[in-house]
Length: 265
Image (cartoon, rainbow, N blue to C red; front, top):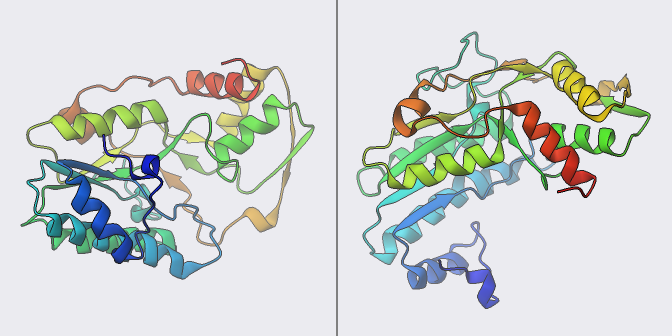
């Protein structure tokens, strides 16, 4: 596998002059593009578009320029593109209705990627929430795990009733690997479990797994006006295309994360 960082080189998606030479040397036959500005509450709105939208077109241009015969390019979009939809579960045919800059940048990325589809073998994923050890505590589940594993007395949260579709990062990695090898991948596929869990439910699971109860303090600053209240996907296309994925027990994922935080695994 070509690893430019292992050779002391780096490139920047927003600076094609640094990207194109590396791609030309690597001449990949498959690409999984996960690089993004992904923290929804990021302060610089323009960064979403520079990295997620324009940066992706720079990558696609570099891949076209290198002239190699590509077998598959997988681009990671986001389930956030669906916004506050009434669809339940959300299928790939659900219209996009972004409610923040992150989601809008991903919709724009998908639309621009479609203009390359006649020249590049592109498949687009729309991952719902996924997690595992090592994810930044800026994100919800790692923040919860950190507080429970450290047995902290209180935690500040926003809306406790939001419902999300959580997956184990290992299942998502398996999906990406399979997308590289299937003969006819879907053009767009949800990466999801198909199961909705509220923040309250995740808190209850962590309370039972850790044997520790935390006082929750609702911080109005964490309640976003553009909050997506329920985001649960249909995994039908995923299963039909790639088969059943492993690591579907999310309580086991939480237990894995707790153990990792405690240094037990």
